[in-house]
Image (cartoon, rainbow, N blue to C red; front, side, top):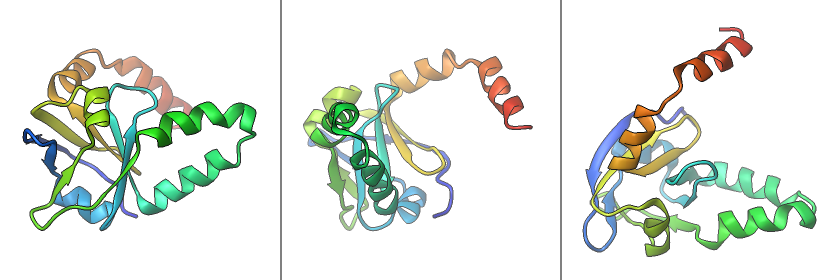
Length: 142
């Protein structure tokens, strides 16, 4: 799978439908999976291959460690299949979690995509810690 990248601004309609960016759909495939993000108040979108890889890793965890993770990721997860106009329906529970109403941003994040409420995305960017990123890049030898 090619890296998913780019930032795309879209409006979600009153029914929770979002026109998912063509470039990201091409990288994710005909059916992809959405769930609550682990570290931010946004949604994470995985291709079928990445979803299966993540599912297998979580399933391999001992129940004492994995049960909470399973509940978090899978309880609200949904398979998305774009319609002919490229729209996907984001389930209400996930919209509530991410605070999605109308103005949303879809971003490519290498092996996944994310769906953010516009104001939360703007706030995250405003608080971005460049030094922390530079420290990570230094650890990687860049």
